[in-house]
Length: 311
Image 1 (cartoon, rainbow, N blue to C red):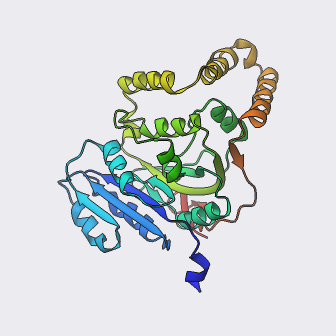
Image 2: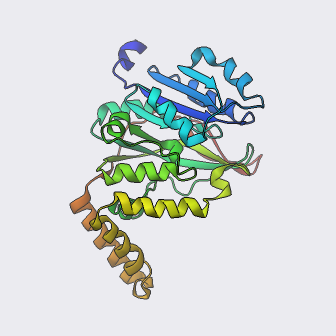
Image 3: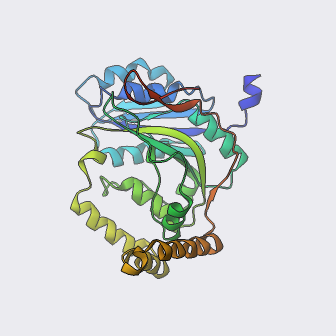
């Protein structure tokens, strides 16, 4: 019965690149394998860790598609290497200090099978600090205005651990994980996809959790060198019209004192959204999509923090 129900679900390929993340990686692995998704390809590439990472990975090796522990050129290079081994329809990487929420992959597979015309399936991401900190969420929905403005001029607004991509779109457009962007390779990847016309389906459900800690790249910040390379990258891949939109929005509208008044800013927002909906037509927020995410947020009075639990 279960096989008949799930036989048409697309294969999902996940890659985890790791180095000395023994304190986090078991939670990451369990969050993937305990999804119990029937058509899963899971690859772990360890960068020759000298902590207990390999010992943990070996506990689950019979459930992995592939794994190794070898020295590499960093996370971006390892993820690209893993991506080249992937054979699924849908792809993402899950950092070894992040984790998926229960039901995310079943939701993704079901939705992608029903709406196969999209190239990016974006869930809402959550955040936490270290192992015991509360869950943080900015919103339980996608802000239509913010995403309209972002997508209009190809800017990234996705939660990486909760965003899944069509592998064939990446391959057809020769889009790779660029190792030269050690701290921005996810942003560069998404923006390159948007610049080549990727269509997005926004899904109003929590997908995964990014964990901030003192050694995480997202916590350390982006080096100036990466930012300079990123600006050069934008000049290379974006058309003149895309660059014009960026200058128009950031310099003329958002930084203009005239638009600091709420009334004028609202007019500007509505104009931008109208242009976006009329001409761009890549981002869609569908209502009433059935999902299988079994999680909800709640206030834990005992621990005095927001946590998630199975519904």
